[in-house]
Length: 610
Image (tube, rainbow, N blue to C red; front, side, top):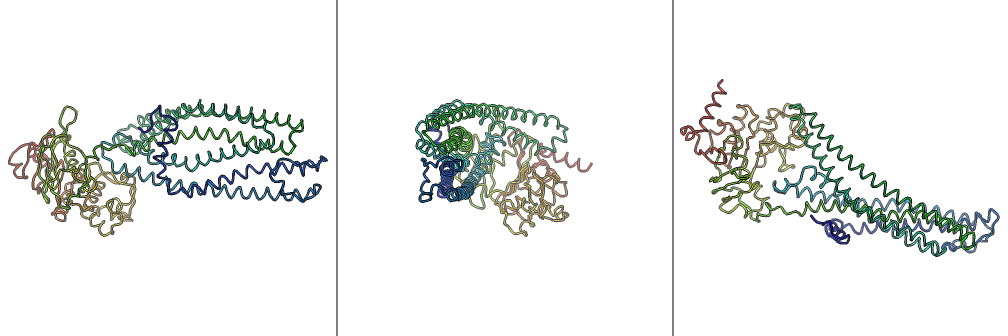
């Protein structure tokens, strides 16, 4: 956690700037220009009442029969030299000035926000990239600490909330402070007494901000947590829609969604009540100050201490001044949402990934040898893998069998550094696996996973995941080896057919073939197929494995399967039972042994014959 609960506001702001400013630094000239246009807009708002006061005292009142009056307006120079009774000329000068101010105001408004959001969106983009890079490179144990809904919000919503501090909140605060300071000067020029009530209103607004600061911070945190929980539920319901439907569990998933949705609604309702209370107290304070100030201005006017035009200017300043005072403290208070987002975002970005930090900077050869010596992995009080010795010189064909839960997937993950051993050592090219850079290590493996994940993209782009810009011929060659051709060519768009998210629209066997093609396409030194032929019929499985053997024969190949027939041509087969290698040897040797492997083979052969 970056910010402790008892940290002072100054420390929170310091940490926030320390973490966020590097993303916005190079766009500061654009931000400065946006700020300049924003302040120019405030200047126009501030000087407009000065022109209006002259219109009242030098045009409107004289037209109604009152003698023209000079006042404290800073624009008296505009009508110097014009006869006091030439009302139309004075009106024309002041009207043109107001129109020019209005046009300039809208130009400044447009440029300010266009520039501010330009640099904000650029910085926001980089923050999203960094978050996704962290997610993509994090180890599995590290990512398990963060629910999917949290990661979605961290990589999408939090960068936007943080950038709004620079694009909106800072801009508003500068506008607020500038307007308050300059309008106070103009009010003092009219009469010093006019500063008393706005000052009192400012103190009351500050007290309101302090009173609501803590509950609003808690509310933003609760909103984020409940939104993340609902997001996770929605993702699981969408991704598991087929499973849910096949088990007729729609009611249960709907009930779960309704529960999370109700909780989020309750949190937002609580937030709405909290904001309503703050708004009511703030508006009440604002109205009281305005009414008191108007009464004071009337009293000063009746006593001849301010003119009618100055009274008009006072009312003009007062409404905006009190709004700016309220907005100042609201903006400070609402910045807490950005602080909460920054705590989450940078808490994730800077969190130590202990597994990843184990690795060095070495680069393995493109033809690596792999060796496991006495490797064990604990799972609670038991062993998921125990005392595994395995040698994989480059080019060896290894078959791995075992019943469900025997540790087959864990074994191939250990080889790649996707899981960590509790005991023993793993060597790549004779060096400990941790001597290598983890990304460089993963590049020498092509891993077709047991749980196939396909993206909402074309068949070709799913196969060419490792190199999206590869020529179509290379993609289709990998597809042909994995028997993707058999179904892809039947679609009107062939390999350019877009498939649904997670492969919706394809059968299990079709998805597995795309996964195999993806591994072949990567063209790495070690091919690992983790039970990716389970949904294929025997003929297709035999064809695919023969294609791999003929085309990728020089590479190391590891085939994990439940089908003994798929391992006939392996150099070595190991049989795992309760995490231990209980049988090992060639196909013929294991058949002669007459153990579990031979039993499974005979049974499967009989089932096929039946």
